[in-house]
Length: 299
Image 1 (cartoon, rainbow, N blue to C red):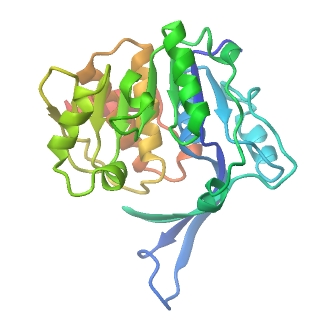
Image 2: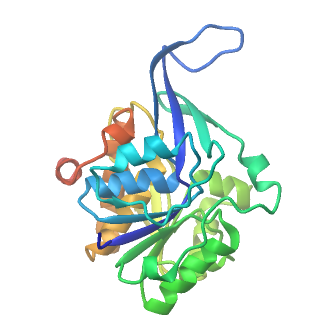
Image 3: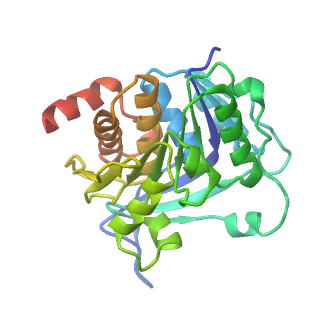
């Protein structure tokens, strides 16, 4: 399959639990309304969304173990997602568990343990998998290998999207788009005013910087320009799981189609708006028709 986009990062098996009647409370019973085991992770979810939008995607990143592999292969067998760069192992594989109730969710996993040693549990990106693609997305979590994807993109003039990369990182400085979440602000810029952080990010970026705020106003801009603002689309929230990953997918789609900055932010926000209005997202990803309809209604 000829790929339009290459995505490198977290590909997981996600166990998700949607609760009825509010979030978990200590010593109180909670009813599970629905539960699933489906592809997840920042890259897994973004690949699912891009395929739904009509993009041919090549996926790479996390090693895939024996409990995740059968589900992953079955899920993507009829979708435009190339799994050939993935590396398969004989352990269970990387999984996470997410409890969801409306606007609130709590992920659980073993990532601190996985990152606590020098073992590499992701594949080395191959130049031949990236050449020929017209856009790339790279998660920042895989150390030297994440930067290697960016270096290959720079060498071949391929624009890339990244997420949550601080102003002094190689990924941020050379990205076509860096989407920064509130979580990233709390981790790297605690106590700083959001607009001051935005200015610092813009000053050190070659491309577009976006700060998202869940249901709050988005900030975006480029070096030498003014900070621009856009409100997200108003939708009824069913689950916020995958909202940021879907936003990233929207940015990749916008790069592939030559959108302006305003169009890109609006399109990515609409993708995310569709995503949070349903559960589970992998079985109900936004379609291009739905995204365009939401943009038309919002306008």
